Length: 442
Image (tube, rainbow, N blue to C red; front, side, top):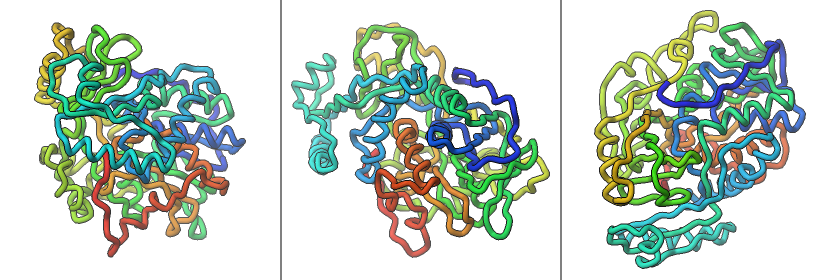
């Protein structure tokens, strides 16, 4: 793989029956598994590749509340609490640090938007601080002509290479069963409801299953007549060589986003830039994505036609539970990074911070970001398939809000009072005839 992540040891015994099965070993799946195990629920997690091998190990490592869609903000706020608690509970460092997040801009409209958002967020309980042009300049010390910024001191960062593996290991210590390189081919359904799953190693019984398959969720759900609108966007990022500190936490500028890493390097990316493949899934849901396509978000995306039309998470076609599934054909989505983005980002980084002259790319990677039409995740139980839950479509926000989403999913599965209203996350908002919100915040 093009990324480096901590390895997780599989559980020794393969289960015949559990209460809940979790499909997918990213930050969402591991967090759900951990929270269920913490409640004493018998739970097994199955991952077709390796824990954290796809987007959960390829994201920027930001853990933020600032600039969330207001629907997501309660989820983000609870996640920050869980991020702070998890390291101590598990006994492992997830790389989480409350080192703050800074946004700077040369656009007056951004400042006005942040000010409006901040007033609304304060009513929910989150406080950030608008900065003047001089204050941004004093913090960054570079030559950009800032008009303002915003600072969220309670936000933080964590290490994607550490987090999902550590949470999975923590779940195992609480009794969860974790199995990698073991794809779930499909559901086992009896009398109209979930009774287990068929894995490549055989059937495992369970009365409840939650799909946390990221880029693969929509194709999996399609097998059961569930329309989960998703567009997988290919993002590019890279790790630098070790370099002087120009920001302690995370920084977002119009043409660059960076995060200071524990080893003294940076994770670097260009916000909003990516690629979208012309594939059956994207074509099928194109009308639902119209509000997003007409926004400024889509202007930074490149369209392409390649082999994903016939193979991968967005391809068409069905399969049987006793045959090799698409999930076994591609164990880990490990796309090549966009060379143009890499070169541009490195130039922009050095131009913004001349003290970083000589910094190099240590290694780079691509990752598929499962995206919904309104950039808000789906967290819901499927009435059409009783016993099936979905937690997917986190739209590039999953790493930061993963622990909170895991807790919310566990509450939903065990019929405990959820810490926030799940109405904004219901799949039904995308049903035929419903108006789809244009994305609010990135």
